[in-house]
Amino acid sequence: MRMKKLIAAGIISGVALSGVALAKDDMKREFGGKQVMVKQMKRMAKMLDLTDDQKTEIKALMAAQKETMASYKEQMKTFKGKERELIQSDNFNEAAFLALQNEYQITLNQAALERARMKHKIWNVLNQEQREKWKNVSEKRAEFSRG
Image: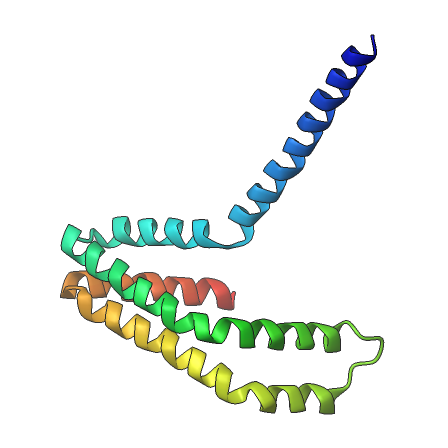
């Protein structure tokens, strides 16, 4: 009888914990991470009708970009943590926020520069028709975000 209870408890806890693990994975997919990037890449490839060569070239560019951006990842994580602390404090300290911004300004600028370089490299992989499609989609997205 005792063995049956142990087995039942093990099964119940396994089922309960698997639900938590699945929920965590769903949140990861929904709010960011590699899955979102892959989904966006596939959507872009389909929308722009990329050739296999273009897909390969863009994947290589993105892999190189990932290595480059990894150097900024820890710095940005630290910055975001400090920024969150300031925002969530009882009293907002503007001077401390501006000091934090100044402290990380070089890193923020370099990361933005790397993202712009990446967009430029992808732009140069596209043919004229694909560039026009990208422009139109970008303009529509900008209009939508402005409201």
